[in-house]
Image (cartoon, rainbow, N blue to C red; front, side):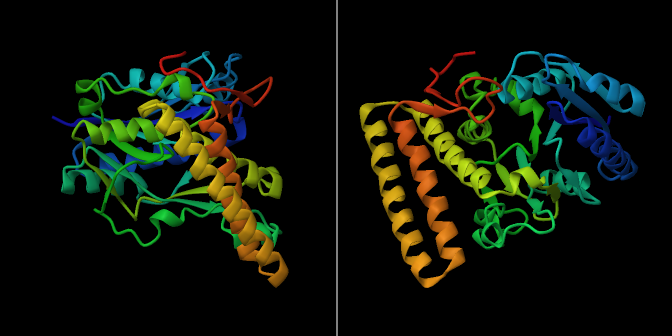
Length: 324
């Protein structure tokens, strides 16, 4: 009997991206099914997180047989990803991909083949950002869109956590252990790190697949100094929130403030020295480190940066675990 796989894509008011990405995902599903050695059936599930359900006209116009749509009006990335899990109740495998990403040829087969060979519970692959022409050299040299921590990692290498922008998970394991995405991180980020950490903590095995690449075209409005430094702050803050979810003692909070402050001071110092030497890379990396430190320290002080907030202030009190 064939196993069932679903490719899940959360979306929020990106009709052009949907129209471009969905035919590619359907093609990936067809290629997977054509590989008799894998014995899979595959489909695509879109979860629309727009309260106005704006994805429906796009899906209807495309008319793709393998694509189904679910509307999740509760705002936040956690609610949308949780809905993906719910929609995969009858599936054996689920693959997360973002709506602004494009898979390379053979992407889905590579993820599944790695899982089959290794017996992994989850398999993650690389995301390669494609910067727009004329991008500020400061951003290019600073490597703000590079995922350096996974460079050179070979397929089959174990990892301890992963993002859900290119991730395959065993749904039978997820259901068995009651894994879900933390709702209190829905507007801040970090929910994917917590989810995959929980998967590993429950005995799951996460593996890397270097061949399962997706490409992410970066829009011009994100290729700016302000945006990349704000994202660095967000990443630092999200990492702090994950730690606070796992343990929010005074000691943990003081540690976050101390380590964040050290990064801030060290990063600013590096940026200052690099500026004097006209070292673009050093300056950019120093400021990136400093902003991550700011995010960590804010988390330790009980403040969260709501990366996905749609209105109001982005800086709010740290939400309590279990909050919707």
